[in-house]
Image 1: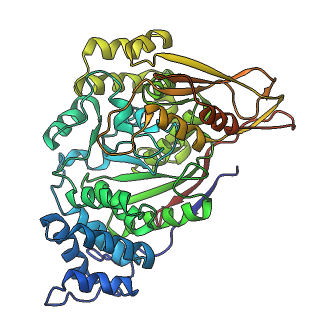
Image 2: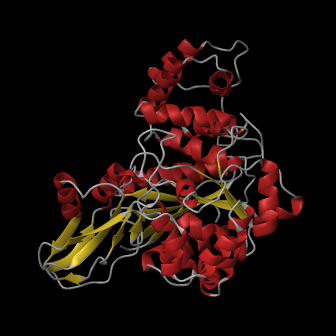
Image 3: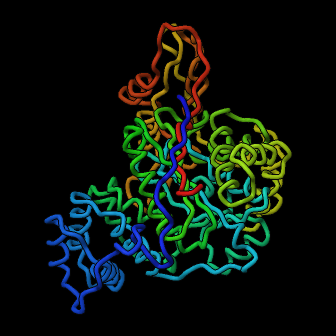
Length: 482
């Protein structure tokens, strides 16, 4: 897959201008606030909401005067009719201002960076990238989410480490950044409460895939962090929100454009999510693989994505002269142990026993496995024929692991943290019939017939010669003037 680079266009907005179009901004707010049914009707019929309209809707969401049915109706109207850049910018800002803003020492201003992913299978990049960036002199106040549906959540992965506490106040977050340079925490009710309500409503109203709603949700959480730069990993493919690169590029450009209109430098990387990232899927198994990457080892596709995203962030924030120089600095942090050292500090600062944190970060892979939750049973699947591995489909693999307890159907459901799967083969590798290609870690009874069939169908074989697997990275969309 050839990587390419897209640069946003247009001059920077005037201070306070949310439109990105100079004086052609939003109309003046009307003196009389409209009632919610009128706002819903306007958007349903393709109308454009004013700044006052959008702020009125967000205020009603937060103060409880908006009924659940009204919130759902407005989300569906936005999903069907869309929002322009100006509306999306105002919605983003209104969500960000619905709660507390994070405040940091002035000296940190250029150091604050973060990364967000739209969600994938086996995506443990955040676990590696946050400490690697901290080792490169950045401050990373990462506010992450939980898994829902087939995609895994960063918080769930970290909670497979005994004692790790994702609940941290803004004051505690500052202390964590002083001690470790990075923290990975859950979304507090004090921060962006309106987004928490809309996020939950989107999940149950089939409005998850709305470009303006995704954009406002992602960027509102990042605006309150007071960042210097942000990189968003926009996934496309069979196991992503967007099935093709064109749709993912549309979201990427919206994120970059809205970010620029609000004074936030955003770059968006388009990355393929047809096969799992790395070789491990499942909460504790992905922690093991993240540690392997921080040993300077591990799967090449994971390391490639960590260094690419990290390089873009170091460049955007002025920590590196070019993206390539930034990527080399991140790679060095993985190879010289400094990223692992920051990870150990973060674990200890977020509640993990210091002895356990040290043992995890200094132990062998076999020793680490003894320290993390383990499934009761392991079961291997054998290749049904000779052939070259064209693809291991991520979606059916994730759906079976979800059934086995690695994922949840409702917020708050407990997870089986040791359940997961290890790929024993690489894409492009020649395989003989009867060779083990997948090891499933399960707590319950043996795989059912349908589960076994779904997993075997995830393995796609061909008769072509072995080949080098492509990088998941496809394209980088940059802010104007970058």
